[in-house]
Image 1 (tube, rainbow, N blue to C red):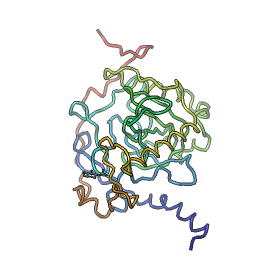
Image 2: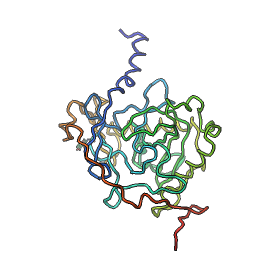
Image 3: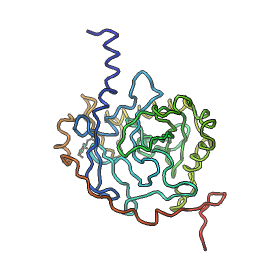
Image 4: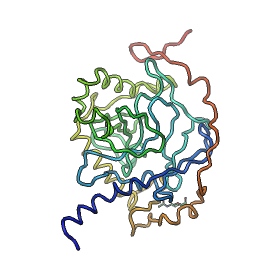
Length: 315
Ligand SMILES: *[C@@H]1O[C@H](CO)[C@@H](O)[C@H](O)[C@H]1NC(C)=O
């Protein structure tokens, strides 16, 4: 019977399904063959297309975050666009696993970093505000809470603002957020509230995003608007990006080689029943974790920048 009561229960379903997530990890970390698939009730699903953006449809301030890079780690880990169900993999640079150089005073990623499921920074047109095409990934998000996190974790974060990076002529949003279970979460509802409890944090993270690629030889990345954008603006940007993703999985637009097989929305050509994903996509049937390979020594050093964010070299 369709009462208001049963509708409320339906709205809670994604949160209930949540508890049933697990990970299927195969291979050795710090190698290009290593993968992690997300499982729902033991069956592989897509981190990108099957985790709901909003854990509670009634509250769009809180979003699901897929953790790719735990805090204080530096392996450049992300979702694989081109493979069915978009498993997590170790990004490569010149056929080697990629790590991020540590720029003084930071050691590796100073926050948890990941992506917003069911969003897409479409590269098919120039976006409003940045006037650049998207980078063809889900929107990026960082959590300033105390949880170190783990690769493949799906957690709920509250939106506090965001930064519009221009990364080599591509729109690359970084959504500022905090884990809803963090003790600080109750005290901060926008980026302006953070300074009182975490003096210097906003500036430190703003600078980190602008200069984190300088040590590898790239320039400083400009931030469009030269400031954090507020919650209302970011909520609008996330809703818009969620719409671009809908067009993607409905098969309405150029997918730019994104594999958008999904197990959540029946009736679309991109739909496949999750009962059959292991066989259909030839995914290893269970976890098989090998010892990690060592990280190349060059990533243990610190790089130093001058006041204009130029790399200081001893020559
Ligand atoms: C689903 O995955 C298969 C195998 O990789 C691929 O050929 C097909 O294009 C994918 N479909 C979608 C909608 O991404």
